[in-house]
Length: 199
Ligand code: URA
Image 1 (tube, rainbow, N blue to C red):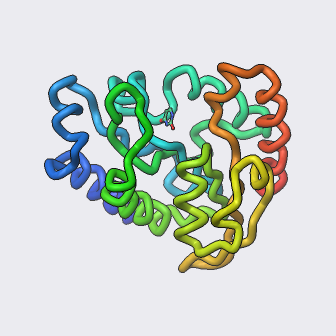
Image 2 (image 1 turned 30 degrees about the vertical axis):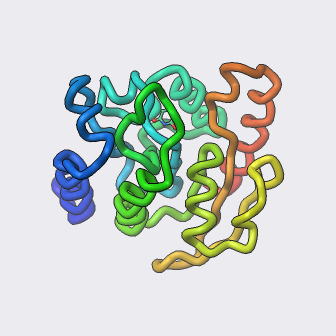
C-alpha cells in the first residue's frame, strides 16, 4: 500500500536524484554512484542520522551498508531491534570525494531534506551518529548543549521539542570508531542501551 509518507519520501528522493546544483552531483554521476536517501520503517520510533555516504553506500545507494554499517546493524540487534524497525539516513546524501568531511555549504544544501524526512517520519528518538549530525541536530533544535562536544554528550537522552511533540535526542559516537579502536565498541554498546530503554 502506498501511504502518504511513502509519497512524500519519494518526492524527496526524486529531488535529490536531480540535484544538479550540488557540488557533489558531478562526482556522483562521473563515478556512477547513487545518492543515498535513507531507508527503513516510515513509522520508525528511532531515526539514526549519520554523516554522509561512504564508497560502499554510494555504490549501492543504501545507507550504512559497508563496514561501519555492519557494526551499526549489530548494535541495533544488541537492543532487540532489527534494521527494518528503524529509519537510517545521513545529513549529506551524496558521497564527498575520498570520504572527506562534508563542507558547511554541503550541509546547508542537503540538510533541508533531512529536516523534511524528520517531519514526515516523526520519530520519538533521534540518534545522531558522530559529531556532524550531532552538531546539526543540536543546532536545529536550539539545544542548550549545542556547543558541547560529543565526548561529553554521547549516551545522554536530551529532551527536545519537535513540531509534532516532545522527542529525545541521543548523541552517539559514529560506529566507524569501533573499526579503529576496540574500546569504543564497549562505549557504543553502553550508549545503545540508553536507546534500548527509550525504544
Ligand atoms: N558513514 C556514514 O556516516 N553514513 C553512511 O551511510 C555510511 C558511513
